[in-house]
Image (tube, rainbow over all chains, first blue to last red; front, side, top):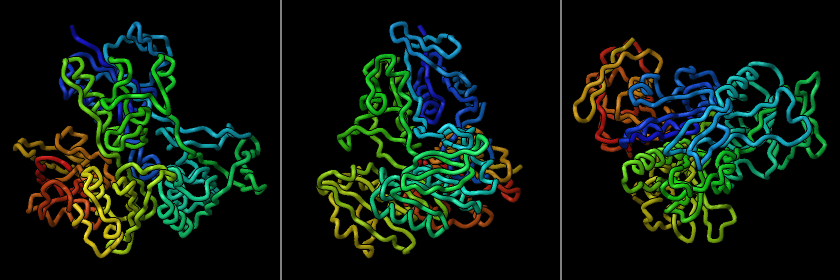
Length: 414
Length: 106
């Protein structure tokens, strides 16, 4: 009898899972269900080229309509799944309609954390996750007045860069003592703080938001915890994202900062997998659990989930997800490329090696844990990124002194 | 419109009508040409859209920039005529362009 694979979430991971299940020979129905009305699209440009107006909407779409026909994937858009009934093997949408599944992949992503302060719901407070969010944000880039960005993570800084490049006055408010603190080391934080300040961004570190002030129902200022008031016409919030795990948790699947899966992307339910931003998975290389918010993770893990759903249907041994994480960010003329997962800042035995790029225009920051290479953050230094991408998983011993010496050819480490 | 021919490593040809303004990578993806992954969507961050430009077309497709150059250094079997297809913008002058795909990406 023919099986049905249902995928909840039509972002990058969900789409990839559908495509990979087909490629791997899943013979039954494949149903890809998305809450948004737009067909699967790329999210990274929403805070970069698309926000700037450099990229047409049609160019955001990941696949042409012909793809879904050719791969025989049923795409259901504008459909929010509200419950999974594991006993009956069905998902239920907001309208109450039920869809039966034999195999299920959860790829619901990680929506932005919301502000939790007085005035947080005022008109003019923006978030950035969806195409609609980016369209809203584009409209404020053309208005006059200051834009306040809450949070100096990647989203906040990328939006700040676009807004500043569009000639807007930009104030960035960050609670931590340095930008990108959650994701990068001090040298990278300093690089990006200097970059933004050189472009005229007012970067306020160690500053907390007290409340959002409004005038005639619209944002007029933000009040900081040191008593200062910053007048503004819009607030953009980039304070991180939280996995959309409610569906899984309510269905009784274990969740802890994401839906818990094994190294084959499978949950504790043999018929359910999870992939992308929502999945918390054990990394064979790092020997710890990771949850990543990045396109490469969505693609690579979506691939594994799709392949394994097909293999389970066909009685074949599952594939393992062991791709090295990687990531990129574009801000002004700087391109950051990261390979590997950085250990937490307080990990014992953590060492950081800073290496200037050969052409003097960038740098790379390498982390080591007990002598083993863990990650590299490379700014305007693609060679460091690609060498890192190969060198880290190889487990080859590296002399930190040589690595930090810019006169040593990076390729000689491979 | 510019006609672009993509030749897979196994010799299969795909002829595509590409809109000026998009990249040679995008024209391939939108027309379901296999063998161009383009994981980063055209940000010159991943080197999974590597192609070999037919030598006759090298002058029209322009120069590699330094970022692309470095990424290509580590592509699978880079050659003199290697390019990242996300970095070539389609123009009417590229009508008739021929690119060949490597055996694998990355």
